[in-house]
Image (cartoon, rainbow over all chains, first blue to last red; front, side, top):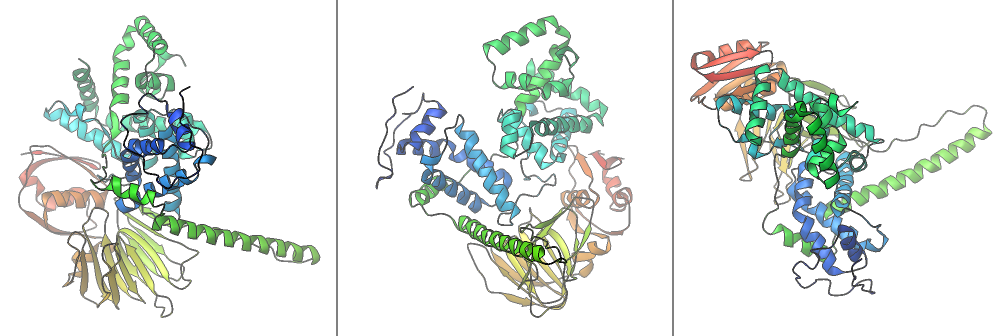
Length: 224
Length: 346
């Protein structure tokens, strides 16, 4: 366990820490969070620095209102700082902050205080998912057709399905974490959502048989 | 089920496999390497699954602007909550008040019930919940509001309002997309539509609002009666202006301008009578309109490039006939299978 600098005062008048490069470089998330809870302003600053852009992108997946996204981040950080002494310890700061943000966002949307992105295969819909740019390596006609089809198939999934795919594959969360994050009653729900999303993608692509073979060719080019 | 019987979907939904791809460690590496040695026929499948797991990501990475980081940090240090936060807290207080009132009501009615052999049951008030209607591409929907106002929603539209609040002192509704309104006249309770940052206020009248998410303008066309429109953006609160039948109120959201124009009723809201109107549209715009109207998917070869404008009005026509009618077939190679259309160069 690292030596933590513990400050005994609840609040100091100067809450702006001096810039410190990578004091927390080797620290575990758990320890950084603990330092923050104990009042270390550098820890708070580090957390803000590390997660600001990530959380900005995350909140923007739910709503296109940029001012509201900034407001949400503002409120989130003010609240965790006000409540730091009462907060529990966490293993993943990323997960915790996302959970707080998601809770607030869904409440605001439900009450009509925040407008969500439309969900109709629109370019900028909520949680638009894509295969990474590397998959567009080959430029033959047939393949660009395939990637377009994949694109369409992805956009035809429901918002929840896309959201779950991002958490499961991109963020690397497990079913329990997804269940907690999205507020499901049990983890089976999360697993089913992923399964249905994958099956739905497969059947969208199976409709065009030749395409399936093209998919395997793309995969071949990528891995050799 | 054993791994050796797994298909692609099964690997993709298996936590152990996915976490190995995401976060390999010596023990899971050891397991999978061994397993693959024993089942070499699955190597291709595993590689395909790995690729898919590793390539899923956000289509759009939304980035903050240059000054945002410091701007927000500044507000955090000032400990000033945002306006959104205050709206949220204000609602909470009202809910609390309502909850207290409900509690009082329940206790009161229980006592009454206890002491009177015949008492009518009390229905607890439901918390405020907006009623949301989402209309997918290829469909339309008509909604009737509690006061008898009728709203027809076009494809790809989201519409919502609070049934508890509606009709109290205002009649407020929210729109993202396009709708034709037939509002019941009521002098005491103005009807307001919130679409993006534009507010349209009426007493009783019929009009069309077009405010799709991706548009950079909002169009309000008056069929009968009078409407008043103004912009409620954070940057600018403009003056409300009144528009009469035959007039179109056009807000340009990029430039922030507001103009008064005339319009052709069939072009502007022919959709509500199931008329698909295409007027001087580019090829790309036509494709978008057709995708919306029919819920179709167009796959267009990258070598296709079509100049010129298209026009046509169609009532109750199939997608196939519309494509013919617009003259697509003479300019390119079109194949259609149900609701997917493939376009290749001629």
